[in-house]
Image 1: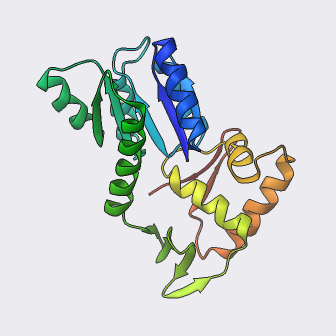
Image 2 (image 1 turned 90 degrees about the horizontal axis):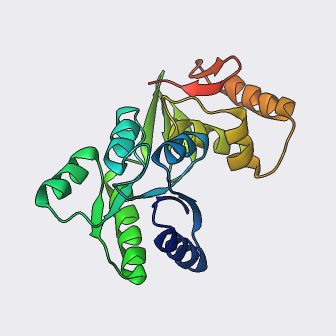
Length: 217
């Protein structure tokens, strides 16, 4: 699991990063809201841990903008704010949990596990892509009018990446990092995407010249 951590208190950020990495998570730590916001679009994350009072863009606005743009990554606020209005504000912005500082790191681990389980429970695994196309995230099967379209492993990973960022542009760099995990020639990515497109009955994947690819719904 890949976690984005936004926390401007250096000591706490390092402690959280080290603890979560020790228990098996991948963590990218940020102290600046705008830097973290840019990262949320350039890399695929499974969980957001957000302090509220951080430079450039506060945690509330950070999550509000992501939700407005259709990004539904589960989020937990980590904050020293104790006012009930702040708590309500966090949930209005779209968080799934709220932890008041100071907190035990093992409690944070439990909250992350619970938030992910609750998120997956309420999120339908069947994604409607239009043109009578549906993709099941749990079974990794693409269906068209009740019949499966057989995809290769890389084609599935490309499609899932585009689905995860539906309505947002996915750059070639993002595809390279998340699907291959190492440098590959841009031509290789184009070939794999073209192979995927040929298997689809309609053009749900659009190319944004010079920017990347997008599924719009």
